[in-house]
Amino acid sequence: GDLDKVVNLLLSLSGRLARVENALSAPGPHAASEDKAALREKQRLLAAQLEDAKELREHVGRREEAVGAMVARYLPPEQLQDYRHFVKMKSALTAEQRELDEKIKLGQEQLRCLRESL
Image (cartoon, rainbow, N blue to C red; front, side, top):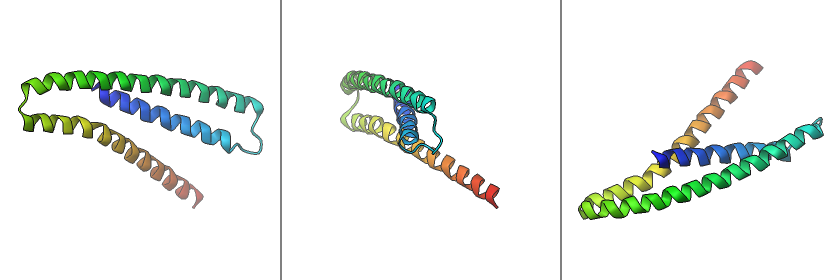
C-alpha cells in the first residue's frame, strides 16, 4: 500500500512540475512578471516536494528489502520468486496505469475542444 502511494505521489509531483516548467518555458505574449514569479515559486516548491518524495521512496525501498528478507525465511523458493515478481511489477503497473489515465484525460480534453470548435 505504501509503495502505491509513494509511486502515485512521485508521478503526480513529476507531472505537476513538468506542467509548471512547460508554462515557464512557453509563456504567452502577455505573461505578467507576477505570474512568472508565482510559477517559479511553485516550481521551487514542487522540486523540493519531489526530492522529499524520492527520499520517501528510498525509505519504502529499504523497508521492502527488510520485509523481503523476512518473507524469504518462510516461503519456498517458487513462492518467494512470485512474491518478488509481484512487488516489482506492482510499481511498474501503477506507473503504467497512471500514464494511461493521463492519456485518457488528454484525449477527452481534446475531444471536448474539437466538439466546441465545431
